[in-house]
Image 1 (cartoon, rainbow, N blue to C red):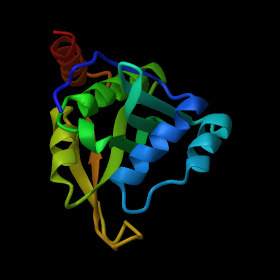
Image 2: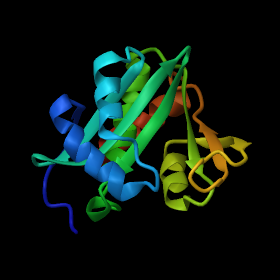
Image 3: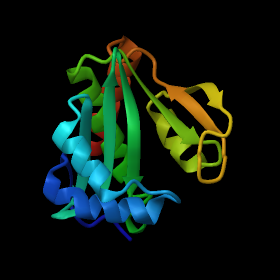
Image 4: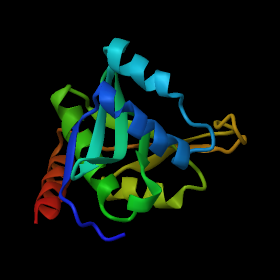
Length: 170
């Protein structure tokens, strides 16, 4: 599917949960239940969630938890019909900017060892593999790779964020 609508990234709202849950269900072997997103939005003061919209349609989502001085990416998904359209790049850019706003020094995440497409996206934002969690995923026992950015407020990441913002704006 060609990207035919303008992409915007906004804070997730309760009315987005059904669409987010559908993407979650289509994307993951063990999806979060819809009520988990509702609880996160209503009661987790450490959590921030975003949705990507193509026109009015929710086509992706992502979330972080503010953990001391890290922004830990908790979830990240793009509707299968909208993958490889730049939606993930839009979300990751907005997560990086949000992480700066909340005072995080870096971003961290776990990713399936077999998810090479996600790893490639994360590398475009200078995430590096810094560790390994054997058997991390409870559904199938797959290992996770731990990926972390350099200092978000450093010149390299500030430059990367500016470059990505310009790239997506043009």
